[in-house]
Image 1 (cartoon, rainbow, N blue to C red):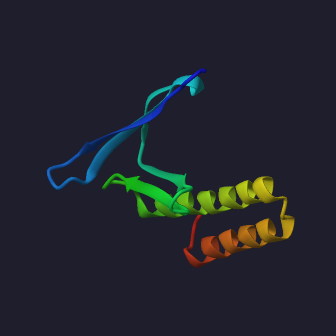
Image 2: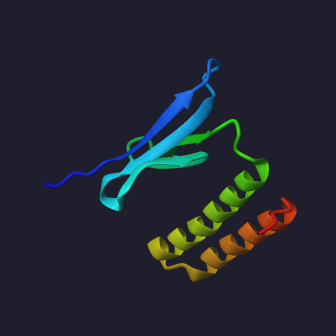
Length: 108
């Protein structure tokens, strides 16, 4: 059996707030790439719930956080369609993402 790793290194300030983050992905050729935000979700099939880690650095600009969240919403719609084949629900999710973009005044 083959294994690989994806890691995230987080440097915290004295108040335990992320100052810098880097990530590594062995198979993707990513080594110590800096990032300002990360969101990780895993499924706990025993508890039947999603577990999450949402981190962002204290210097993450609000406008970039809005763009990040918008892109995640669009990506979730794509993932939903691939996983379920339900195009109508995926389209609704994409429309919701665009409404989010409009309401949060995202400038692209």
